Image (cartoon, rainbow, N blue to C red; front, top):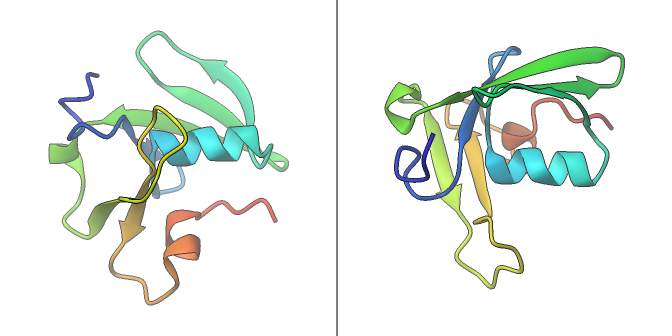
Length: 106
């Protein structure tokens, strides 16, 4: 999937848990060791460990996102090549941190 397919902000993943993640969120969770990388398939799918469970991440296009998912892009200074983006479930009445971090690993 190209960046153009995803709106220019990286890949968007559908999680096997029904939640959605941006490539930036996945990168942060892996770097912070909230998630453990298990497998990465040639077609872009990723399998990550979250505690004692597994989560399958499947890349999707922005057109495949449900209407209630909003991709928010941080416009401040960025220190990485990957734009700081979050997939927000607009149906929830929680903070953006919990809405975008469905598998917290806390």
